[in-house]
Length: 334
Image 1 (cartoon, helix red, strand yellow):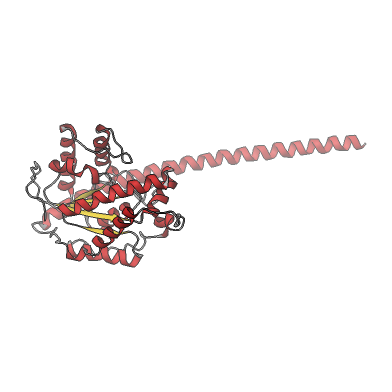
Image 2 (tube, rainbow, N blue to C red; image 1 turned 135 degrees about the vertical axis):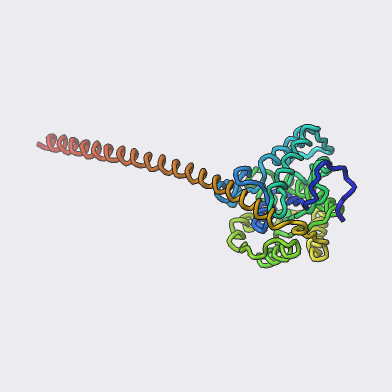
């Protein structure tokens, strides 16, 4: 079901992954899972955040390619929109299109087996970007109950439930439209942990990715904080309920999807060459990161020592003041 009729200047026939879904629906977890299984997302320094440089809103990192995220945001901005104010129509300038191709080509060139990127915004940018993306696309989508998403956005962005559910509806309606045009799998972040991990393992097997990775440490309760705090009594309209059911139905047919063979035509020499190059680059990045963290630790230790000195001086001042007060009291008594 791949769309082979689109004009595309990219000569690579490598399968390219688009990992997406509504914000706060588990896209970061899924992106890292596929990354660990063999989908190249870029060098660590090119990512917005990862598990070593996480944010309070996403404790395991976002795993989004910085350049492509900026390009989706520019695409929305040039049409007077944002991720939470979606324009009705999106256009891509030639300049943005050329940048898209450049980044995608770089990802494919450096990948061991296959490459891709994660961004919820691509759901709406997809059609305007299509000319600049590889021919062979595979969608990895994920969804979550609208109230859980609404609670998460309330905590992160102070959005009302009404606004968040409206966004949830638009994103997931468009997500289902993508599955009408492109092959891919749809995962349900509301599934029990065991179900999610088993579906991922099956997908990795079907795609000839690594099945040996252990995702147990990645799927923890801190990913599901809004599950315990959302307002279950909030009334959801019927169209949103119906869409959630359609998403659930689509997520149950992953085994029927036509999976591409990602290792077909891949030479062992090329894989080893790319692995060595990526390993060297990431080793340099982590060495630099470790050096930076060590400097921060040294600065903190120096600051602690200074504070300790200040505490000692203050203790001396307090002791001296206490002695003087004691002498004054003794004099008054006399």
